[in-house]
Structure formats: C-alpha cells, structure tokens
Length: 111
Length: 115
Image (cartoon, rainbow over all chains, first blue to last red; front, side, top):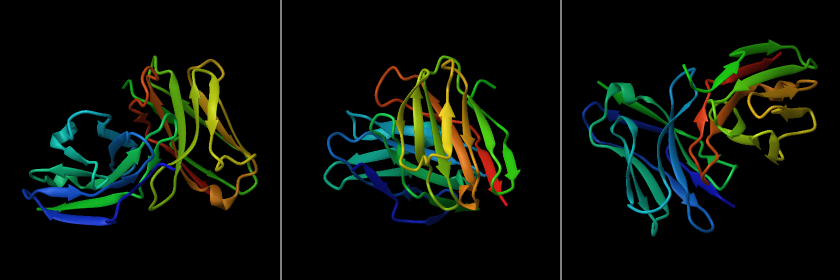
C-alpha cells in the first residue's frame, strides 16, 4: 500500500534560518510525491511534486524538496524561513486517483 | 477567481438531517476528487470522477454518502442521515486528468458540524 509519514507534528524555526519538514514514504514501484501547504480556513495549496528525474525539486514560494530513494524520504526545505511560511504542511503520495496524505506538520516561524 | 469553489463554506445541521455540498472545479479539468479532513489529520480520499464517471470510491464512503457529477462539470456530495462523526471539513479538488499522476488543486472546503 502507498503511504507517507510525517514524523514531526510541529517544527519551530526562527525567521531567516533554514527549515526542513520531513516526510518518508512507502510505495511499491515508482513514487509520485507531493507537498501541499494549508493556511487557516483555506484549502490546500500545491507547492511541488516529484515524478522522475532530478532529485532536487523546486517549487513555489522558494521551497524545494529532495527525493532520496535510499532513505525513502522527500523532505521539504527552504534556505531562509519567513514568518509568513507559518502554516500546516502535508506530504502526499499519489497513485492514480487516490492521493494519500500524511498527518501534517505545523510549521511555526518566529520573528 | 478561476480556482475550485465550494458551497456552502460552513454547514451546521442536526443529527439525522441530510446535507448536500457543491463543488465547481477549475474549468476544463476532467477529474474531480472529494476528500474529508478531520482536525489534526491529513485529508482522506473519498471518491473521484473522470468526467461524469465515478471511477473510485473509498471504503470510507458509506452507503449514506453519495456523489454525483452529472454533466462532467460541477459535483455534489450528499450525506444522508448525518451523524456526529460526519463532522469534518469536506474538500474538493480537480485536475486536468491528461497525465497520471497529475496535480490536484483544492477548493477552500466545506466545514460540516453535526449537532
């Protein structure tokens, strides 16, 4: 079965510092991996996805993610965090139709 | 705004009542998805449509739940005889459906509270 896990419920970073939000996956076959962000009272917004190719994927708002096959990980990163990055982040894996999400990681960036 | 829209944004109902939610996808998106999200959890897949055809349903979608997309455009999700456990955010998403997998774009959700 396809699944993802987000081992951290909460991540706190200071503004200007690099941030990492972790995700590990379990899939049979080639993984198709996504990151979404959710702001309060709003739907999920697409950040980036990995299908194949370069292991470093660049996305919206300066975010990037590194696909690591040997560690079955797809961590979300940003070199310099902003207070406005504070939100709920979801990793997801997608076979056709049935996208499966992790439980989410709440990122708090403090000034 | 040309994104996915959902109505109503909030619905409060009494246990046992029926409720219906509407989702309008991004124009020309062939696929439409429904998810349910409870507090502290990620969205859980319920069902999806390719045009008007309902292609997959989760086991979470009990007999009390029904979804339609009659003309391949907007979709409705109906919950009959609501229960308190149905209280959740119901999210709709759409995608082009031309490649697999493709990126899903989400609406703002409908928050259901069953009293």
